[in-house]
Amino acid sequence: MPSHLDDAGGAGAIQAQVSEMAGVTNRGKLRLLEMVFRQEFDGGALPTNFYVALVTDAVAPTPDINTFSELTEIAAGNGYTTGGYSLTPGAVDFDVLTEDDAENRGYIQVKDVVWLAVGGGMPSAGDGARYAVLLDDAGVVADREVLGYWDLDSSLAVSEGQVLTLADLELRLNES
Image (cartoon, rainbow, N blue to C red; front, side):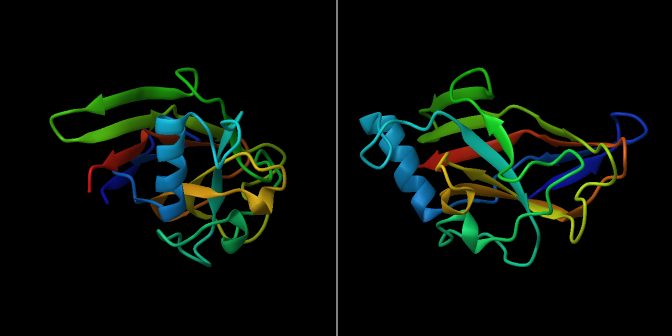
């Protein structure tokens, strides 16, 4: 999966550019199809929010990961909140929502997700962020379903005052 770090944002900025999605979980495929075709989510209303959370390399996300409790989230604090960055469905937080008839797929691109390390480094302790995951909005963070994931190529951490930006996070649902 091609991706790179880019410090073009100036001193103190780290940008993880992810040009390909690492994967959609099997649960994610089901939930995304439910949203598109039935306008419901597991028999209920669509999520009010989605979340992009950061996890360590303790357990790598795979298509068989179902809930957030199966992964190890980075330590909260200093600009990172338990459960991740909140996204509102629709064009506000998703830059691209389109279909590609030529390639027989749906395509979604999440807006750039930005965290500023304040009060110390981020994460506040422990290992850096190796993966970003897209979650639903279950009330209990550990119970949130993992819909997709991206490999950030290396474990990322930022110092006090630095910004961590995840750019161009993509979701692609293919015919096969």
